[in-house]
Image (tube, rainbow, N blue to C red):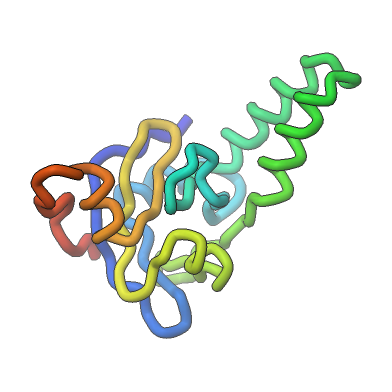
Length: 146
């Protein structure tokens, strides 16, 4: 399973393409799908969550083990899997973030990739700074990882 660590800030181009940090790409390269699964974060933040496809398969297997008649489980499964988008990496290591995901996270010119172990989040850097350091407003991450 992948292990995503550290925080990187990369530029987003006019089309919504952004380079996935090299260390994240190295982790993703171990799976059969050459890309990343991304969805609006379920923690209520204005961010996106990314993970490898194997994590989704594990969650699906866990749900399968639950009671199929449990309406809470069905609702959780529907909310999660209906929001996931599988984004392929292009030859330059970039993904195209769809406009609805960019809008959800308020991402315009730069994206902060925040490692969280088996997942990572993608934030607008200013929003991430404000969330991370609500009192002092310090900058959260160095820029660039090409």
